Length: 281
Image (cartoon, rainbow, N blue to C red; front, side, top):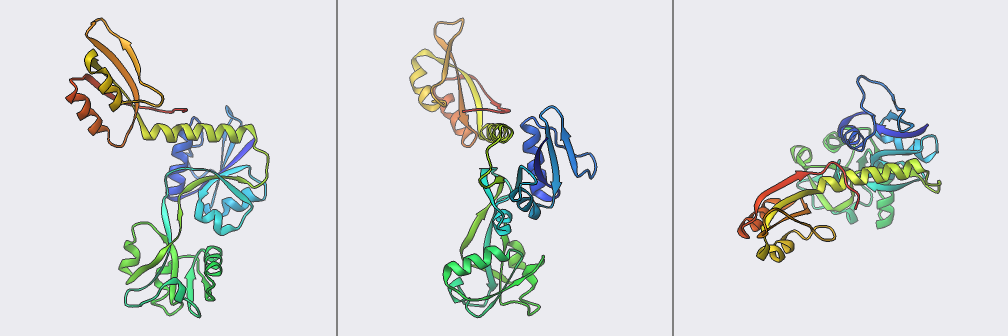
């Protein structure tokens, strides 16, 4: 069976299971199972610590996996990113006490605490800065207060935790992270991986679009098509009224209410925006 690693806890796990289920796979757990088999697609979903997934995939033990871009990079495993999934987004940043006037270029000789030692070591090397990297497994933000470090480097979502710890972000983010599909670097792309990428890509597209249908007077058709041009072109169908036409087109979810306002101004009727379950463009 084709083996796909899935995070076993947290927001990454919830998002991964949701998108895989939406893509037609059976990977939902009903307890604390470590392996869920999808016999229909001949796939085994193996639930692992998010930090370990890239290691298993890079070694070839597991064919593909879903994990955070930051975790994959920090593992230094031989993996390649195949698809970004638009959830689990965060920034990886340096932070220092609010009263300190420091930038990453001034970290020389200082102690930098982090749970992502490889990312920090590589970034400091790129900057030409020699600093001591202090490896911690968690609660990095308190390390400065406890005298363990002078600087921290950590994943940041809202920044509230840093603020409450009396810290501020300095410099540009080292990287932007999100959930990604990974596979072993250099491995042949199996049909199962291509199917996974195609199906999940279809879900991602569907989440960004709605299917809009409406009736429009013939003399307003050209203007309406400019509002809803569709992917290639809108579908236009006659109805049992020579003065009106039915129009169907995919539109971006973002800004949908503005589109409806514009169509209403053109005297469109029966405007309906429907969710799309999956889509291939």
